[in-house]
Length: 113
Length: 114
Image 1 (cartoon, chains in turn green, blue):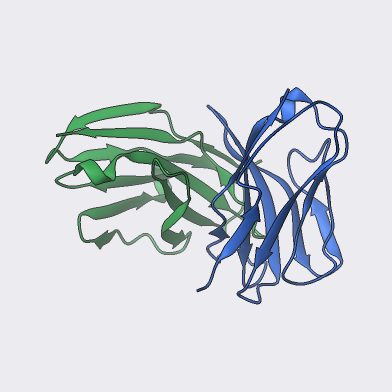
Image 2 (image 1 turned 90 degrees about the vertical axis):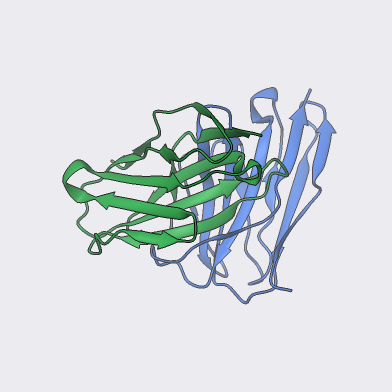
């Protein structure tokens, strides 16, 4: 069965600190996709990134970077030089065959000025 | 503007009073889905639809119904709401039902069942 674990319920950092959000997943499929979504205080869900199981290259987009390690079934998300606007709930999600997303419980990130 | 629109955004109602949450997308997407979000549980899928007239249960379908008579619309029906259905609900869509496609989410509907 598929499962996503985000062990960090809440993280607080001071602006400009780097922060890493952990995501560990379980799946029996060899083909799957991993996603990160951001939910700001306004409540909508914003797609951040998609990674397929065959592509283990890390990805960087501005201050955001993602580290995918199949050996440890992890897909961690790092924000460099955090800003107050990064305060949100972040969800990691897994999708196998049909486009059904299995979400982790989410990590609340609070960035203080 | 490409979007998924849910109505209402907020609703407070009483146990047993039938309600419908509408969802409409203007992107000609085949796949649509409903999720509920609860603290500590993330989002869980209620129902999904691969195309018109094709629907299937997700992980938590009890107490809900859906229909897909038109491609753009995917209403969520609570025939006899109960307090444990108090939650934040999201509708989502993607071009196809393949697992690699990011889903576009509506802004959410907060339901309170008293």
